[in-house]
Image (cartoon, rainbow, N blue to C red; front, side, top):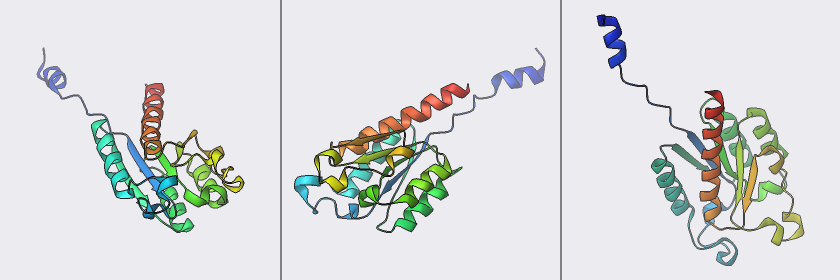
Length: 168
């Protein structure tokens, strides 16, 4: 075997790029753990983010979390995700029911997204039952408390894995 062929055969297999996940938390989610614990539970946002990071790491994924009470900051984060992440997990909070801007940003970046909610939107007040964002997401998970985020991460990683498999 020639030296060139031997070197090529000995070359290490390139490592796959880890899936990159952006988790977005909307308004008032920074108050988790103390705000309406009967509805939202006692788990804090920091605890949710730490568990998401642990689960992502265990699956070989890179995860970034961001929370804002400001619609424009969430839109900026979505727009900034294009070309930087593979999938978005989003809890738009109250913007779920009101934000055409977040919906349009998700559509504009054309990244798959999973919408998550701690509470069951359909068991809440009438005005909370409609999501303007859902139509621009692959799916919606709600009603499982902090577990909604973890299920959302699982779904997001499955989407990335499926898309990567389809390309090969």
